[in-house]
Figure 1 (tube, rainbow, N blue to C red):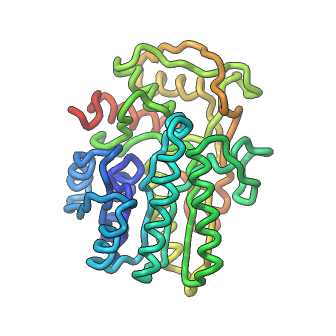
Figure 2: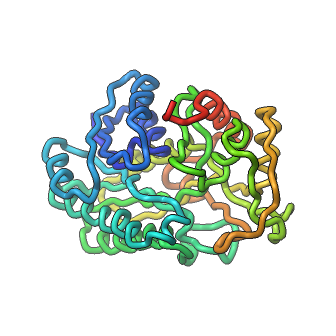
Length: 341
């Protein structure tokens, strides 16, 4: 059974990926500092998967602990989720974001080289595309970012590209996520923002459950069908399966292949008001909203071409917007305060 180090494995995407890794026959080892996640998520993953989750409380800035972890396990690959991810916070705390997301990844890569672990799946983001010149977005489009969070992801991609050129033994897949939403069908794990949500779907669900009074829709005058921003929403379980497919691709290659960026999205755009409407329709819950001014840095539309993921990984998204809404509401209604029950 191949061991996979999963940094940030107690987080939203990481916890769902653990389940899919176990289903696929891998042995995940979680390395997480719990700064923006909960050990309760790991307890619930263990119940869903009927398997104990090996957990190391640690920070990727702690090179000594990373080295100890690698010395005690023979890892086949690393899936790297660990990092800070709030765009607004990154503008206020850029040094913190570069320290955690860039310096932390450099530490991890250095230890991987030291222990000759050369298979790496990186949690990147569609933010590396900035305001795209055309839609759908393909992996060969120019990259640019508008905030320190996105810049940190792009910096790491440049580092990974340079590393793959210098060390020909590396196989690196950079998965560029679009907008993950939804939750496990059990309703026991899901997205649990530590403060007021930065992302649309948890904000919608917290309004529906009564934690927040109303949703602010930022801008209704974009060049989109209804004037509100359009994004590519992907079910978190589909996203989790994409990581397993990435490991499968690495396993199938006879030789290391360097650096491969791959989009994970549905290829379909959904506007803010369309998502609100779908949530109300599928859950029966009211979501009052108001139109607010545009936010600086927001773009009109962003959705993926997922052709490369299908061709290389054999992966396509399965779940539609309705399923994403229903699964989100099951999680939120069962856990109105997230893991802080």
